[in-house]
Length: 114
Image 1: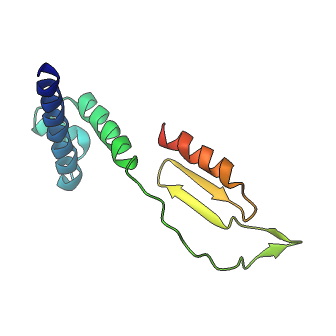
Image 2: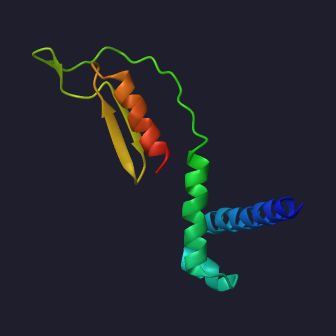
């Protein structure tokens, strides 16, 4: 019973901060100004923004994509990666046409657990 109450409080707390994070992004105000106006801790808001962003990214799914043949070849080697995954402001991963699916799978697992 105590666990259920605690879980409900945690869920309510998370929903509250998710609402503030969403409202701050839509407000057009800087995070600092939003926090001043609503008497919130800037550092707590930053913590929740990061935490919620990570938990939202865990629900991402991979989508199969058909790619055209590479246009630029140099001695049988591609000048560009066949596939590129870009997480804006964070990182990018480039995969050539001779990639190891096992290595890519391990890499995605590591990135998901960051």
